[in-house]
Image (tube, helix red, strand yellow):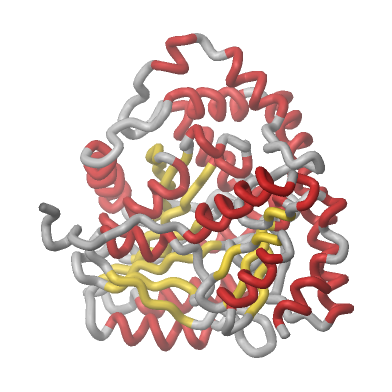
Length: 407
């Protein structure tokens, strides 16, 4: 019955599948016997989901009309103002800046792929990437190509990006580049300011051909766990004064930074030197929203707008979040130290929810770990650990166990 573009498609998700195995093992053996390193959500040392207390209190105090009512298709006006302020901090770039509400960061990714690439185009990202990037491309009748994330020395591979981007631009008019940084999923890597400068310069060079349309999508889902608030945002100042055929879209998410995972509160934020492009961004993406999810939940928008509009409330939320950023940092520090001692290879980790371990036998390694009641996610090029979800008392000894499974 399905049309040709849908025939044979099955929704399989390795992350949620791996988590389900862990849940079943907990039911069989008891929570204390299982280490679940699969899901990208913060768990406390009792393995309960962390929800920032102030956000929890605000959500529970919302009037029924704010919980159940529609929001405008592009988002509440004060919410759009809030996400722009929260995303950029003191590093708002010069130019025209507009925001549109999306259901989490996923909606921003989907709209960017759909609106700024042609059907049949190839979208570009790093070879270590969040799996739904490919799913969204394929569902939108696009393809996904990758370039090397890392140089042999562990830096960002600008040369590989340059080569692959140039190759695609010989075949298509538009180039959409998806970059997840800082605190990249699945590796925890962050581009340095120097690497960002080289990346922006490269895209400006691509845009020198005025027949081309370049879109840089920056997925900042883990921004608030990447380090000091303003330092981690400084790279965004590089998006000022870009060519009119080079559009930057920031993918903002409240899922991690405000622990509203299931409230599906996000935004796509455009930065452009062109008023016409800024207006087009609003018009085309409003239609894209209307034709898919229509409206985003009002409740999360109202909470973020209230937090942004009250300096004391914002400071309180940031202090609560900082506690958990430091907790994740400590868990990662223990693991990385033990990994070095065990001779376990890891990818360059700077901050964030995930650590990845390169291997050509990820499925085999994960199966061995599962047999020892340690659950992780097998990726195409390695194994991903959600260090954010592992209680502090379960981190010691993990690296040695994984190193043994790698042999």
